[in-house]
Length: 396
Length: 174
Image: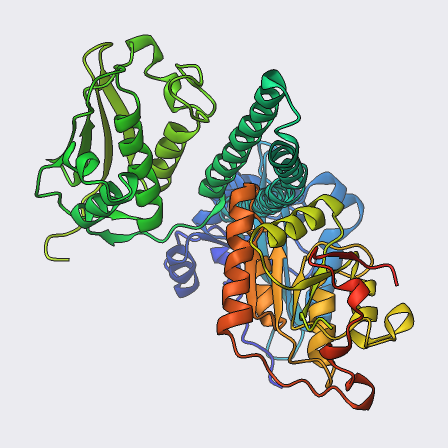
């Protein structure tokens, strides 16, 4: 292996490199690298202008001084400068990244490469030392690491939340399972035995006795409806909904037929104004929502009034608003918000029975389909309920 | 001699069992209802083991009405067990439960249920259901041949008359 050429400048040119010699020109060109020539003992013989900037020393201040002035005191104390030179000499090269010191005492993160130099006789004459200030680079790296750490922390957090959500979901699942299973068993007994009592012993009971039995059965029926509605409401929050274009007009007509159980007079009281453009929805949920709106419209009318319901649609910037307008009791402004909450009722069970979950199902269902729902009403002047859903593209 | 076929009702809830029996009466279904109260008893009855060894008194049912939530052995376990028994694997099993969960429904069919019915709270609906069961499973449906083996050959015709009163409420007390 041949020794590397002696890069050492002539004695006369010992300075930092504004000189005309080739070495000087080369080293001036390669900022941001600080390049030094050290003698065999580690004293600075020459350096480039970048080194001057990096270290903050004037050439006159540093020439012939030992290069350990660039090391922080603790590094000098443990003999790092000498050890690094020795390592370079033994291995032919030494590279390192560590803190270095400027003249003003501030530190910078340096990448250092030290290479020993030999003359033609193979005599060790000194070292080249190339230093690069990587402080910014290190800061960027640290920022990146911090960022990565934050991302990791956040995704761990997200994972935890997802897990918790799944846990909560399956707890909810188990809860509704238990409601439908266990809560219903005593209800069946209540209802069934009250009926058996009425049928088998009705003649032995007096009128109050028969009335009490009927009350038990009515309560059981209401509880059954409540459980059913509660389950429907909770299912709405849990079930995955695949949204697709739905023919609103056909769906409305189907629901009209359904809520009127085919009764012609009832169906005639509901006017559907075509066209009802298609919307993006989950069909079964939409059916549930429309069923509740239409049966409410038919139900909440003053005694003796024939219900008149009008269903029509209105296009609004990429969505369709469907109106269900009735000639019913109407709702005072102060009640218009809370009727969409579960279990809120404005009327006692007579003459308007119900569980108070119908409109909660409407709102929840429409929201799960990416839409909104509301009401526009005045007491005594009927109500206009509306739902708004994304419009399906024409022709689809 | 009464030749009324047996329906095995596996139901742990006495109230439910009574109401189903009452509904069968009201629907005037001419069949005997044999009630067992848990999964293990169902297995014992169907395999003719222990107290149910006498097939003349405890004949194989034309079908089983099976609740899912049962003590000792769940309805699913009973169902899976039935489908592994060469002698009785073809017995129609109708799940009758309060669970409306699609998970339960699917698992029941996967385990070999022939039908899945949900218990109603409304007594009128229970009578309707009973009538429909009778209409379909006893009148329309053509049942399988069961490989009864020699000890099962006594068949339905030898039910003791003392256990076949028109009232279909025969509790399992062998």
